[in-house]
Image (cartoon, rainbow, N blue to C red):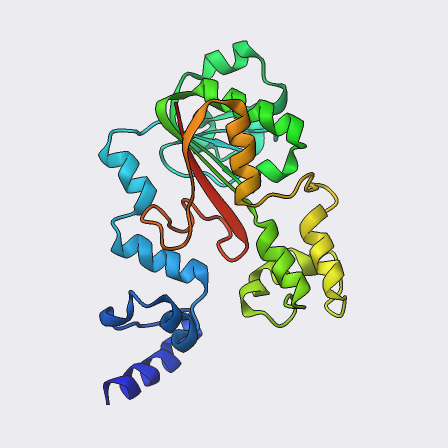
Length: 263
């Protein structure tokens, strides 16, 4: 009787993008995906509600409140300072005192010293836009901006996810790729294009913001280790206590998210 009631309620409220889930079901990821049709970003939202806020709350509880977003793309949140390459004039006036126009690849020592030190540096779907030689230098600059024990958080498209999806012809009919297709792939290729075209959109992205390298966890760990500045390098999978959407996982259905600490 209770199951039927939940199904009826969800049939009604799902049109508004909402689903009601019994508390007893929250710990079973497979059940949530199979029977409630939830995707990874939905599960991460549930986790954020149930684990007290994940990494964000951990930082706040430990008085680590100075955060830097590199490549914010115009999305501004509380507690962050931002650097990107677009003009200050297009930033929300309320956030302009937290934004600086700066290309991190070409930032000088003087530029970095003027910014001070941070407890967290976040790059969400930015790092794949650097060639690896520049990426290593960017990480060294991040190391100079972090306080000892501070965190660096990097998310990029996960090469392993996209390779598996391509090899299984899974772009078009895979519900986990729906948001990717609608938001990115179909902005450049027609809906009847083969999966090789979908993979190429991932690999090269849009013409005005090309991806310049492909990463998975091993690749990000490798380049972080090359700097000699970071330890405690780990992948934040969906079941990690720090994992939440959108604070850690920008596109959870297709990204790999890595957290490391400044030595």
